[in-house]
Length: 153
Image (cartoon, rainbow, N blue to C red):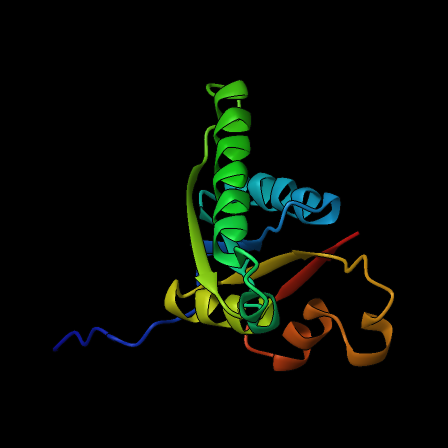
């Protein structure tokens, strides 16, 4: 008998191996990251924290330092995450990575989940009223139907 090994990626066969959590500094995104960290710890999965740096063409056209501001947000998020992981080190050890992507939040999270071969995507509930009309990132991710998506209030 010949054993054949599949080289195709298979999601969720023995529990999640990679959990993607979208973070942007908002309270709901930080709650989502905490929830994802607990899930990653219990499942022995890698936690991939993803910040999508918005590209604001209008702001750049008016001379606003958009890239500098979003880089600073990313640096602050990494510092905050490092501080929290050091605070609970030895009690709640988890493997984590921080990734940044540029673009719109939905497209960035889709790209991150695809590239990192995510088994699950965790996001915070939208705090913006306009998303009731055009749809939040969370709703768009759920409708994509490519990963299990958990929305944390």
